Image (cartoon, rainbow, N blue to C red):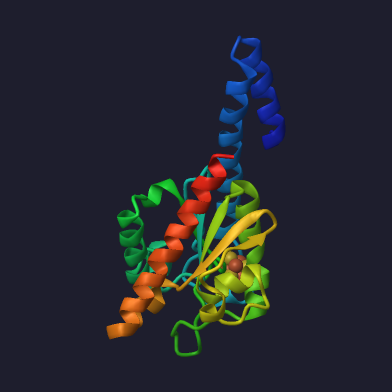
Length: 229
Ligand code: SF4
């Protein structure tokens, strides 16, 4: 089977030989290459049995969306709905996130969404639990690959687990949200996981909604600001 890089070199030679300009060919092939690489990652994830979480998980949930986006959203891991439907952030919290993105003028299809852990993490009673550090380290190889392929300008990190993937020493969201951090050339904007927002009531709900909205606006501004460079 032809290697992806080898294929792209061949396509480049053929297209430029046919008179297409190199400056048009290169970005087109870069886009194709990203899609192909992401499909390879997706297939690996769907067949992954690299850690014990696969024993209980009903499915694997790879990331989804635009591989050419400047904005990537990273959550913790799939819940019951995501596990059943095989897509990240499609339950109640993902629906809330989609609503908030829509208010900011962004459609889901414009960006890329994924999780730190691709299998649902449950306790002995089948209830969701927070993934342990070693679990995020093991499955994090896929997120690292997604980051390598997309090279987003900004990541909106939803919740503590996503934040700690990038910065293991940041122990609480309340202490660290409201700022922009840098991870290997990518800006990281931490915010509350929408699942947290869904659980709030009264003043706490108003506050959480406002903070998520502000953080999203910051992330969007970062993406746009860097685009102009
Ligand atoms: S959690 Fe990640 S590493 Fe573990 S089996 Fe699922 S996909 Fe593989």
